[in-house]
Length: 115
Length: 112
Image (tube, each protein chain N blue to C red):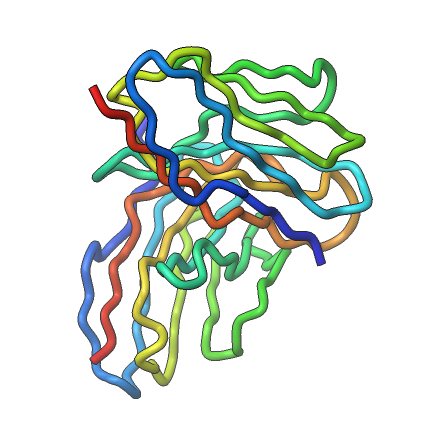
């Protein structure tokens, strides 16, 4: 069965610091990859996605992620965080093809940004 | 476009009862998925419906069931509620299978 591992459960940064959140998955085939974000009091929403092509994908609010197939990783980055980036971040994986599947989410990383 | 809506937002039930939760997807989306979110287990996939057919199913007991109507609206039912069913139940819609998902606000179910 596939799985998603987010290594950092809690991250605390000061504004303007750089951010990198790790995400590794286990699945032998081609995957679709996602990062979702949940701001305090709001719904889960899509931050960015990767289906194919350029492994460096850009999302909303200055976030980007890089798919490294050989490392089964899809790390999320932002060069300079803001207080408003305080949220919970989830990495998710779907098999890109095949029969039935189970969309799999990581346990989430709680990011707190101090002003 | 209006987002995913879920009703009710909060629900308190007694052990042994059953409950039905409702979800209206984004207009034009034909896929609806349901998730259970708890602090201990995180986000766990329940099932996904597409064109009124269950296409994918997670590892939950048969007490958890769902259906999708011709207008893509979906319902989820939990029978014989247990204390461990207390959770936030999220509905998500998608343009198709394997695509990104758009989540609703969730239904907070408390079982006493």
